[in-house]
Amino acid sequence: MRRALGPIRCDAAGFEALSSLAQSVEGLVFDKLVLDMSGVSWFDADMSAPFGALLHRTQKEFNEVELAGFPNAVEVILCRNGFLSQYGGQKLPDSFGTTVPYLHLALGDGRYFAEYVDQRLMQNPSIPRMSDGLRKKFLESVFELFSNAQVHSKSVAGVFSCGQHFPKKRRLVFTVSDLGVGIRENVERFTDRAFTDVEAIVWATHERNTTRTGPVPGGLGLKLLKEFVGLNGGRLQIVSGTGYWGLSGRSEEVKTLPAPLPGVTVSIDINTADEASYKLSTEIDAGDVF
Amino acid sequence: MNRRLNVSILEVVGSPFCVASDDGQRVFERLQAALTQQASVTVSFRNVSNLTSAFLNSAIGQLYGIFSADEIRSRLRVTEIEPDDRALLKRVVQTARAYFQDPERFKRAAKDALA
Image (cartoon, rainbow over all chains, first blue to last red; front, side, top):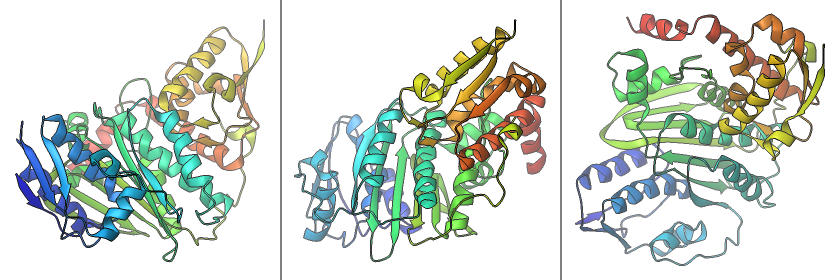
């Protein structure tokens, strides 16, 4: 099977393109997928996460995957972040220090993920000097992304992650994808009601909504991400099935994709020039926590 | 006998990155055992660099399903915790208290909102 891809940006159109690819390889078994990348004039490096997840799923069905015809600039980006080394490409040094390497981890590797992010993101001198408060908030947001996948996805294939720093735009993007059950299945099981994929994502982002049952409470993760992005003026995107949900600053957008993207992808994009302190205006007394 | 126990999050987890819910579970088991033995517990967050709500829900939020809020308030303290982490913990505690006061609450509220 041969398919061609166009530009892949970390936006609704980019997720739409990947979901169309997912649909076209559905049911492909013991075959070969050749992706013609000659039309990929741009590829947002953090989209390696959902793209890698999709290709992993394709390979798990005993298909061979070949990526061919890359424009040079795109190939260099995907060699620098380590993505193409999984598909026969070479690993190039990241001389600009703007990549956060592509990573595929098991769900139980939360500690390793945290150390990897800290080392590649926070200890990287090329990542811009952010305020201490912003740096901590961003790091914890990334950890919340992984935790969400751990808690909810039931993803046997694990978690796929990648990031990219855009120094001129003063943006830092991090994307996490899983191949789990997706948001709608969890929400429907919990509420015992039928949802569309979009409705399920909207439900999941509302305060205190959680599909957690049993002895461990939950429901704060996505809310914390929303709050942070709202204050920072950044962007948060969630894709699951045919549902796309985006938050830019405080403005929400939803869209139904023409085809489902498996699992869940969450992408956080922050403004690194944000000088807000993220300190509370009034401190909570230690005796007032419980 | 009113014993006082000190629990170091860093010592239990073994890492300054306290982000995974299964690491939180290990903290919970230590705290549950101590509180069950009627001990008062001081939980130190010294040298913890990062926390997530998932970790705190496992480690501390879960206690509200076993012990009353009054018991926890009277016998559990936190120390050496950054102000913003303290704020996050307070939110986790508030969410957990509401959850265990009525575990069906969120389920019911969600259904009502959709009606």
